[in-house]
Amino acid sequence: MLEQKIQIASSAVTQSTPHLPRVRPRRTRRTENLRALVRETELNARDFVYPLFIVHGSNVREEITSMPGVYHISPDVLPREIEEISELGIPAVLLFGLPAYKDEFGSEDYDDHGIVQEAIRVCKRVDPETIVMTDVCMCQYTSHGHCGIVRNGAIDNDETLKYLGMTAVSHAAAGADIVAPSAMMDGQVGAIRAALDAQGFTDTAILAYAAKFASSFYGPFREAADSPPQFGDRRQYQMDTANARDALREVALDVEEGADMVMVKPALAYLDIIRRVRDAYDLPLAAYNVSGEYSMVKAAAHNGWLDEQKVTLEILTAVKRAGADVILTYHAKDAVRWLKQVER
Ligand code: PBG
Image (tube, rainbow, N blue to C red):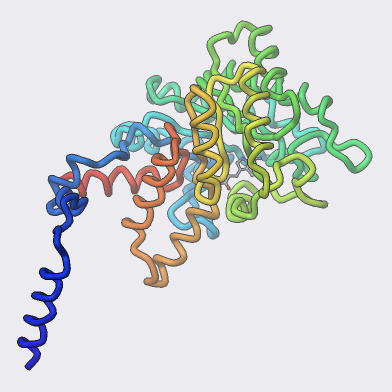
């Protein structure tokens, strides 16, 4: 009975379809080799930057509760980390520091013996080839947790520029290859370029956090970096999450001020911004797959709801497909290992 019905149905299709599909996209999806042959976007270890959180002390390697698999490490543990990263073929790290003390002016931020400055020297001693990037901002260092100097309850843009310049110079002096201003102060790229050049650091590059949105996806990071604002939020300086044209304007300004590379942050919920910046500019483009994007995947995988490996590679591929040349991600080390497994 059933067979008969199928026969009737299939003959009806042949009769009523004068032409079979001539074009069949499925032909190149048939086997893994065919799929690989026509694949448009491929992730590579060289695409990634791995962020690190450095704390004072010795022999510290403590997992960050809100970011499973990410650790607070002390400078003496850093060599092992750098060796692992370089063996995996990841070309760069991004350093964040947790200072010993915080004050109104974020003094440790630009202290030549601050935690980040010490960490930079360790990285460069262990492996001069691994690119050292540093986040240039004040929120981890200030007692009020804002990204700049506070005057009368508000963040003083122009006063902050001097501090950001000093911080960038001290990072460059310690050996940083690339400084990445993330405070979202107007004119920060120009001020940092001028400060670096005035001290002879003309070869230190600037990766501008150009389109940085006031995102709730930074939640887990603020625990990792102990940097939540003690009053208000960051919407007076970070971008409104609803704005795309504003992002292009921010990028234009940073390019004009001398940025060598620009960044869109976060990544996953901002793929349209990545694409628009890619289409409009020729500069290398970075995207920051931020803490919340990482921890969401971790939590779902922990519950058995998502396949961490597959979802992560899918997300990172999407970010690259959208137009990012460089992806900053806490999944960098895992991703490289998983890519190697897939290759085999
Ligand atoms: C510093 C800074 C932040 C992040 C990178 N640099 C936090 C913030 O702006 O509040 C977030 C990174 C992440 O969530 O992974 N300003």
